[in-house]
Every structure is written in structure tokens, then in C-alpha cells.
Image (cartoon, rainbow, N blue to C red):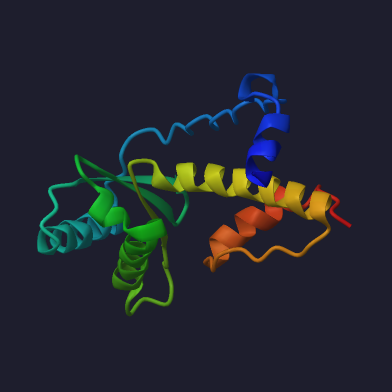
Length: 167
């Protein structure tokens, strides 16, 4: 009965204050695909790895800045390459970085691997989570523990909260 009372006292969804949907960040134009020595190493490694994973994803490599490469895996049904919360994608990225930088102290490169624009979508959902949790912390004056995250995801949360005062 108490649960029903609470429902009756709540305003209908349409009447509740609605936040505007977060606008997706504009996609940065990375220009032409890159075809230098490192990018060819990246392509060769990923094509071999994806073949072993029975994936027909296409590999596109761009150099966003000197020594930093963005790799996009394109195709259908890439969920298996992304994995739960991006764990498989992170593993593919780590293996790719290790493979192309193995044995060379100089001329190291950093590679970011993405599929189905997963990283951008994850970043936006983490920012929404940060806002939601900050609201709860402010409202209820209680600590909130978030799920375990990798360093980059924690960075996204901290950046989203840096201008929030929950004290």
C-alpha cells in the first residue's frame, strides 16, 4: 500500500522537469586514412587478430597527431569485439599497442581502437552517470560507490564532476 501512495503523489513523467538530452560531440574529421609504416603495422596486426577472432571487420587507421593513431573497426555485429563494458576492445587496443611498439624504444606510437563509435557513447553515458550520482549525493548526503572502472573511465567521471560542488 505504501508503494502505491508514493506513486500517486508523483507527477506524471511529462510534467516532471526534463533535462535536455546531451548533444553528441561533433565527430572530429580525421582526414584521409594513414598509410605510413606504423599504420601498416597496425593494419597487419589487427587483420591477423580479427581473422583469428572470426571477425570480418574492416580496419581504418588515421593519425590524429604525430605518433597517435585512431583505429576504427567497421562492419556488422561488432558487439563481440567490444565485449562487456568495452573490455574486449580495451584488450585489442592493448595488444595492438604492445605489438607495434615491441622492441623499439624510440619511435613509439599510441593506438586507440574503437568499434561502432563505442568509446564516444561510453563517454557520454559515464558523463550522464556522473551527473545522476552527483545529484543523489547532494540530495541524500550519502557516499555512493561506483562500479570498478579503468583509468580512462575514472578520468571521464572526474572531469565531468570537477565543477560540481557536492560538499
